[in-house]
Length: 621
Image (tube, rainbow, N blue to C red):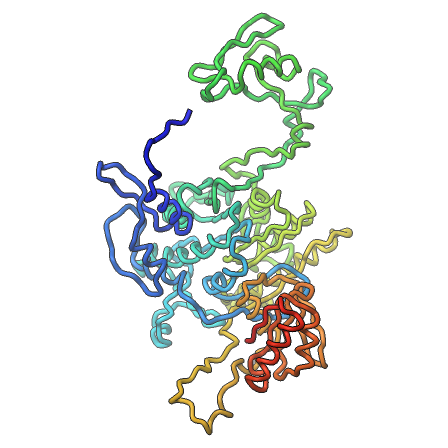
């Protein structure tokens, strides 16, 4: 029976819960007036979340801290003037695929994807740099000049992205790595569905720090497990103890909403030695850790007359009435020989019918190794050494099964794509269970070394290797489709500067005689497809919507999602074209702003839509 508190609700506690749901990273621990530890809000961090500049104000508290943390938090929230440009020639089945491969800084990519995929991602798998002391991390200091960058940066990506060699000699090896991972995890959390799951692989060096960061970003209550994955079987003799494992940290978006599926049932664990008509079974214990109620009693073996009590300190998992019903139904056995404590029969057929699974173990000793991953790539590419230490598909597919078995149309995100193991695993999973999962992969434009196997074979960057893997995997899997409609394509996109020119001018800076020379609002060289994807991002629409090219008055028109959005980006537009589009009644329509001859022409177009298709939302770019 619930005991009433006889006082009004604690509104402060309730408000803290609401803030924790929006910003779990600002929740810390403090002592109240009686000295008890209680949850509290770190107002410095909350101010940072609500500010467009770096907020100062350190204060002693329980939390993970490092030089540059405030700047890292600011980096997650800072706006960017960028877009995603489609690269049709690098894609496969561009118009119809729901899969995305994005080349560029993943911090930028996550910001661009945030509105379109807010709360829509069911599973995130990432394999970030392990911070071994020799790898590269992103440099997110956008304030550096070119001269400063050339002096400080260890490597330049093909798009100018800064990578810094994170070596022991920097003196900030942990701080640099934490500043890199922190804003990316903050952005990724918001993209997860309430029932979604995050998997992060990491080595021993940063697992403790990463756990603390994830506790802060996702909330400690949303920690699910630290899975130990046997990543290699060979023993290394150059250390006191051979490091043969990696960690997989698992976090939920909301533990109360978590949807998790286990391993397939193993038929070899079930037998039927007594010829039970319900088929093969196995025995499971009936005692529990004091669940309460009528659960402490003696159970008699009807064949021997021997009575059994639950083990000391425990009780039966069910009450007397339920136990008697199971006995009468023949679902209780007193051990295989009839001379031990009662156990319940668990039938394979019934479990299979319910869709039951085996609870996964925190030890993965049979999920493949990095050697297996290398061999998979070698078979696919026809040569060894294309990519170092790739994760095996068996590991990634297993984790994704945990998160997506019951969500066959799940969106899977990997923003440290590497050789695109995640894309390959998603396609394999869809083929195995007729799923329609889609993937979003992001990979920084890191160059392959000139002497590497990849570079010599014609893949000058890691994204080039990844895209080729997806193509090769699609061809290999295509032979096994047998009428299946598994999506083996992908849309290739690149992070780029905005399609819009900075055309704002003050009145004093604009001379009347120079109006004809003012810049167009769209940058030269940007295609209609470039503008279309800018519109999808600005409207917060998914970038995987089907696209059809049509013609109106001899000009290219894009019809998105079966005409829900119609985009016309010709440099001039006539009232006749506007009417044709309005008569189709799209939910949204968009035109180039500079395509209208005058303000009056633009106003007339708006009036025409109000008359012909008043529900259409009309915009210009």
